[in-house]
Each structure stands twice: as structure tokens, then as C-alpha cells.
Length: 290
Image (cartoon, rainbow, N blue to C red; front, side, top):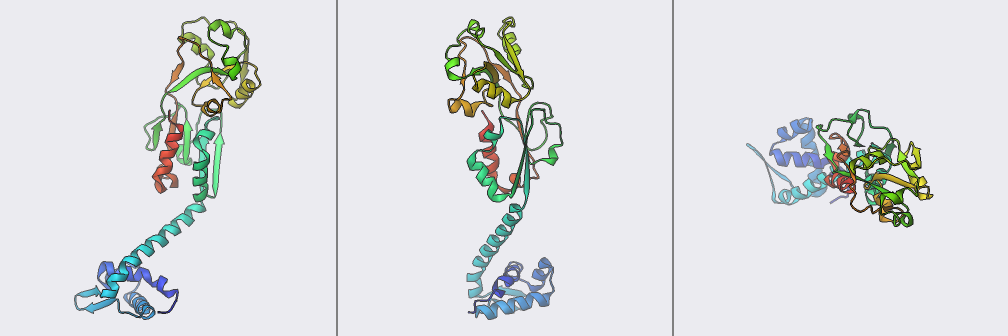
């Protein structure tokens, strides 16, 4: 047997003839002439040194060597086609829109490496303002309740619970509403829930505490980290900082958190992520769901 690349080039013709049991049927499937398919089979038989088909009046059938080889040929073609698909995916780009504070939950290191393996470019846009674009322009969108949720590819991410939080040493000293008066209340102007709503739900008059307002979640977090006061945010948004011990929820005994049915994950049904690997979609949901 000669080690000649013509063997690979002839595999599609061999598999097509074996499946169709016909040279004309294979030619039609491959959009080639019967003569071209016949020549490919002759070259393959010559290189392999065996006869692959028995040519009969009613069609063709595989010889014993052909029967042995056909499974390997099918598997080889499948592997080659899968490699070609991955090369196409590797040169593509995915677009992600997410609110601030969600990106670290959305793209953990393991998932980021997985996506980076299949896509050369990952564009992530993080914006405090509600998403107002066209979902079809994006591969992944995490958004709050400003859109319809009936579109295919949309997944509800569970209730968001909003709590007061601060540096751990401050949080340990907050057990009553009176304790709050010792600290500045930090507001996120674009947050879906805020201090005033917390007081109303718990039937408390809005206290005349010192207040500071921020236009971005990152500014709010920086203020908390510098010890400027106590903030109010979804435990989902601050979950990574809670887990690392950077922040701590204030344990106000007997007080209810603010609950919002607010966060949704959209994965474009046409995106390579949706079609390529089910596990990626499942990991996105696992990382964001509470």
C-alpha cells in the first residue's frame, strides 16, 4: 500500500457508493459525474491494493475488505468534518451583553477557557442601563425585566434577594435599624431595588440618615470597600465578594429582604454556543442561577 494523500481525497466517494450501493446514486449525492466517482474508487483500490466493490447488474456491493474498511472510512470522515467545523468556529466571534457585576459570574475561568478554545474573539459589553438593543444581534444577553420573556432561548434565572451589606467588621455591628443611623447609606441610582423600598417593605419610616448616591455599581462597591457606609444590592451580584469574605450581609433580625423577579438569560438560538455544545448553555445557567 502506498502512503498517498489520494486515499483521503477518495474517501467521500467510497462512503457514498457504499451507502447508496450505486455509483450513480453516489454521484448524485456528491454532485459529481459517475465517471469521476468511478475514477476515485479505482484510485483508492489501487492505493490500498484491494478490491472494495463487486460490480453487479443490479448495483454494487462491498467485498470483504470493503466491509472491513467502510466503518473506518465513516469514522474518519466524521472526524475530519468535525475538525473543519471547529476551525470555522475558531475563527468566529461571540457578543455578550451583561449588567455590571454579572460578568464574573457569567464567565468563570473554566467557561472562559472553553469559549476561548472555540472562538477567537469574545466581545463583552457591560452597561448599567437596561438592555434596549435587538436580542438577535447578540449571542448572550443577561438582562433585567425590561423585555418580553417569551422569545426562544430565554431562561429565568430565579428570584433576586436584595440585602444591606458592608465590610465584615461593620456588618457585625449592624443588628437593628438604630445601628444603621451610625453609617452612611449608599445608593445605586440604577439599581432595581434600593434602601427606600427596603424600609417600606418592612413598614419602617424612611430614616433621615446620611446618604450618598452613585451612578455605577462599581462606584458603589468601591465606596463599600473603602468603608464609607452600607450599601443595598442583590446577593447574586455580590456573591463572589461574599464568598471571598470581602463583603458581608448585615444580619438585621426579623427584617425581610426585597425580592425581585428580575433577571433573565438569553442565548440566541442561532448562536454557535447554542448549537455547538449543550454543556456550555448548562454551565451558563448554573453560574447565574440561584
